[in-house]
Image 1 (cartoon, helix red, strand yellow):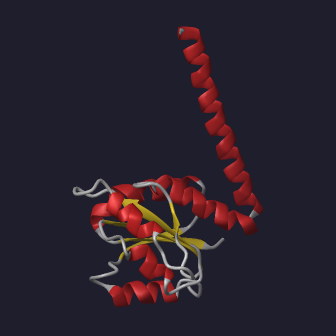
Image 2: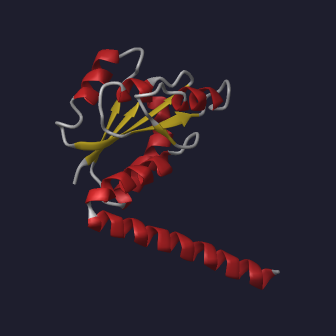
Length: 162
């Protein structure tokens, strides 16, 4: 199975990335996590993304806040799917990062999940990898069924209470 590369612009993004890591672990998807900044370590970020396919990655998750150029910088150096996670900051509640992540120029697409959407970034990565991995597709279907069952349990509980 191909790996998921996870890059965060700062270790302050770790709580968001932890949600992605936990989801990938639950689905038994191999991953690597790195801290590379689009602005402070551009050479390392470019090298990681340029070599990602050769190094066994199938998709890359890039999380950053504020200017949030990391996902775009990663996408500029690879043709692998890149999923951006805009991270909430103290100034604009992540709206700045969201806008930076979704406003990519034609030719350099970045899929974008919700602000602090680490779990969904991992799930989208899994769906991409599952295109060529039937066992992973079955794990995703089972997770969806479990999630639906939990909602229906809550529905039944509310119906009893009210």
